[in-house]
Length: 616
Image 1 (spheres, one colour):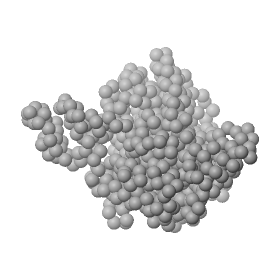
Image 2 (cartoon, helix red, strand yellow):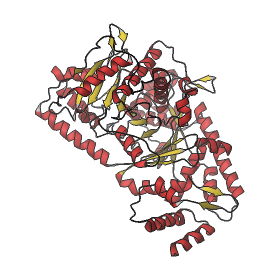
Image 3 (cartoon, rainbow, N blue to C red):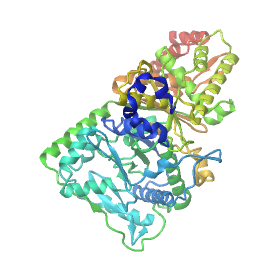
Image 4 (spheres, rainbow, N blue to C red):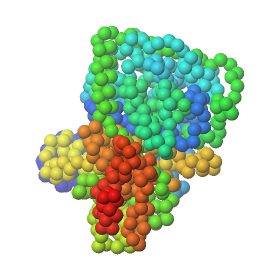
């Protein structure tokens, strides 16, 4: 990689030594990609962070308490315990197979970090320490001190502080309620507003309190929940944490913690400083500590007694002139328009999960990727470029590299499924070969044998040196039509023997992005006995998004009788899993169901069965 640009292009050579001096990074940098990736992919982007960049994660299934401030207090305490382990470098490193350590560089900017907007390129500002967090509740902002006499407050103290906020009957100042919508505006607009309206007085001090905070916490004023029998609740939960109402999240902070009125947890994370495995590790640690160490009383409060009065939360104040208020209003409208463009749907089924997939002797990730390929082909009628990220933390300061799931083997499998001339055993062999190929590709990419970040670096150099490359133009001109990912857990010690996690099967750990590519993305999470599919698209792509969900529904949950190649289904199960179809009666629903099967599963015997049913 170091010698490639100079050896492969005479255009690069003829410009001389002076023009090549910026590319000395290729020879001296510890990591060729990370700085450029952070600068050009994230910080230079001028689009809003809301939905287009920030991503989210959700709670785990068992709800230990419905007391909002008790849950928040325990989580804050666990988060600060995690921060202490980071600061003292005593956090146990994440390893592969309990042997190979992964690079921990990304953890350094987890706390006390803000993405500060600038006109041309944002910058990440990280403080060595912060003694407070900022809490948002009903349009008001509070600075909450975390220490008293240099000692970290106990959960019972933190609960008392948060209760003071809930009991505060004051109303937001003019413009305060929607103020965070400024962070959802285009970055240049927000940068200009920050310089113009927040450079002096009360507004400057309050903004500094937010940007210097360890993290941002939202006391959400509605209930959020998960119910396998009502997927719309999980849709609402995901939407609340991904974008909320457009003005409840301070999107510049490294992460926002959202606590619903009934105690559900969510996390909205700014993307430039880390990738999802970092926050997944943090999330698992905090929830594990909450469940196994901190715990709750029988009435749902934190454990312990208040020994002395903690510092009272400080209400932040603002001095917003009419021009700033107008910008807040226009930013709120922009956020509303962005939210209106999001079509987020969650598909959950419990017919099988990782345990069953592993019994089939294939990788769960590869299996789900083949499911996605089959569903996409049935919907689009063709194969398209598919993106799947793989972590590169086997290398210092590594972030991600791209796995390309569409291979000759995956195409052979997809084409074999609906071919009536191919036997079930042959189809199974096609699936195993495709999964094996995908697994090999994933491992190779993790070991540094990917190509896409190398192409990215060549693209950066070509732009800097003003060299036109037909090769780069062709490669980069291809769009990723299918964007996929899954969360990577770290299996913390805290949860390894937890009765609660055993009953739940696994942490929910749902990770989802918004509209990173315009066509959105598909995020999946195989659990022991269930699967989640998260589909996010622009509103203009809604028909395609929901068609793909229908295909995923058909591909994922059926029981396949390998001898007769008949897919058996339950109409009730179909409607329970996919409540997006507005049907007036059972008979209409049945006809829709059968027509979907006719569309998606063109097996002769199935076609005959469905046609006969439709004629009844």
